[in-house]
Length: 453
Ligand code: AMP
Image (tube, rainbow, N blue to C red):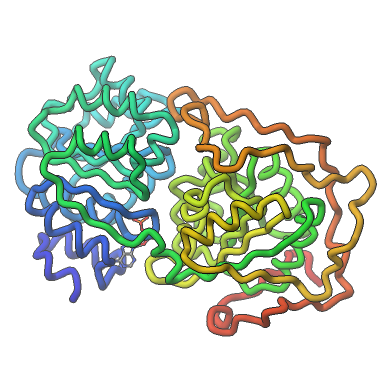
């Protein structure tokens, strides 16, 4: 059954049609009816499940009646990108409704935000820090608020935002509808949910949902050969858009540069970028003018590119949870995707954690023809790996916090890497030992470096 079952206002249905959704996703099927009924909802769903429309559509429906020009819905999100993404979804789905939304986050001028708030908006999509600034300076009036959404609550916790959230909640009416979305439910989020939700309906889509549309593969590799392997894998894999994850900003930058040197249209996204540069990198990736985006976990939060065909973990994530978030970027909304993870020997404990979460063993691949025995070029330690504490909780608070603009200190890099120029194996015609994947590759183009012969 389609969206007609929700009996949304014709102007909203028109937005759904215009954006191209025909069938509600499972989280939309579960969440839209209780939200339309005005109930509080706790949604356990990660990015990629269609959760944004699951709360945006019923919010638009509610706002169709009642006064305009007042802030009646507030959506709080951990990152600027996620806030922009929600704002864009609200704008597209609600295009015909003439409802207005504004984004509020740090790192950009405050005056345009004040002007938009003064001009009158019904929906505010905000990151916590800058929102608190507006509250403290009296530049936002939340006294007419009817719906509060806390999106990616576990991310907000990871980023140290919970105290800010609690402060914000003191400034919104106690009588309101509250929706809380989170991919995971650590104790702190459970406590927060208990505090802010009233008799909530819990809706959930399986934690391993991406596994249905994402195929996973591990590529065992010594640290110093990662870049050579990356180039080899890219050269022989059909891809649309590739999102590559590194552990640090420095590595994101260096890997991005090496891909560019190899002729790929690549950009790196890391916390040190100005908001404009960040947006340009994201826009370039969304529009397809950049084939590849290299990012850290934090910088990549909220990235919504539905055509990501491959997520490549150049570096293993710190937690199994981070792994599911990373690969949530591909295989979105029932499309298929591949997640490749480069694994060094010391990553093995993390591999086991990930396999536990996925409930299956992940296939290990070697690339035929690739010289795994080659020595590191002299002076090239290819990102000699710093010691790492497995299972450590992600660093709270300081990382790229929108409010303070501070960025996580890069981990110790060991000796500085020299680029491992080009792939040393052009003469070979390597293949994945598991054979090509015909089902997913038929419609994809193979990236050819722009200088390819
Ligand atoms: P989200 O989980 O909200 O970030 O959504 C993930 C992606 O799925 C976005 O690109 C949405 O535009 C897309 N999407 C959401 N709902 C639907 C739907 N019912 N049908 C097709 N695509 C959808």
